[in-house]
Length: 329
Ligand code: KG4
Ligand code: ZN
Image (cartoon, rainbow, N blue to C red; front, top):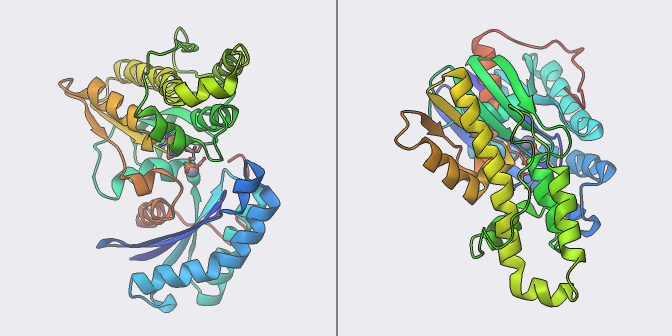
């Protein structure tokens, strides 16, 4: 079985090939055009996907040393994501399916973040997934393959969104998450106590209060620039501490609540150094095995779409050509 995976939900145009022998290629064309606007501009994202999708697919086939005629099925992100961006991937994939007479597989992007953990490892079911990205923060009880129960999610901003928005307040360019991570590594996480919200709620999250708290904290400084020149690293570390403490404390609760012996991290924020470290510390010597994808499979990629498509194809779960993208799938 040879699956071509295509991802175009936000600002990465990506294609990958997954076969019975594992991942054969993983190509990502990141759109840099959004940097100057401080966030993703949906219309520009759609246009950039349209421009690069064919070259990205061709490169993924070249790297896998395969021809388009070798593909058995095409898997594509159906949602959630930006509707115009999703449309490019879905229409391209439908065209390919129709022209080559191969099946189409619609993939949920958030599910795919979870199954990215299966590219290199085989986490045992049942497990709890902490799915933390730019648009979502969820705790999911994965009872079996594609058998998911949502335990809780954020009421407002996602964890990645909190990193990005607070980073913007600190003057960092978009997306600020990876930069905040880099700076936090040299800072003091206890420099300032930012609020750790909703700890008394079981599995729900809220990060918008933290953003406001960071904004007020900076506004109170007489000379903001001088303060940040001296303490940007410390503020990044303290904000990262507040976010990751909440995530790991709730993950621990979810493990206790469900009684699982396995947990996985998923989504862009699972690339975060402090989160990875804290999750390792929380699970070590606890009998719970922890899986975290390689860095390149944490943020948006098509390898996760291809493997999820592969698992669906194995179950015979195909979509028909009337499949539509859904922004809020
Ligand atoms: O999963 P992803 O690539 O896209 C979505 O599905 O949203 O996640 C992107 C998010 C962005 O908010 C980005 O700032 C954040 O993940 N992110 C990080 C790190 N790498 C990416 N946040 C904190 N630390 C990182 N190392
Ligand atoms: Zn994502």
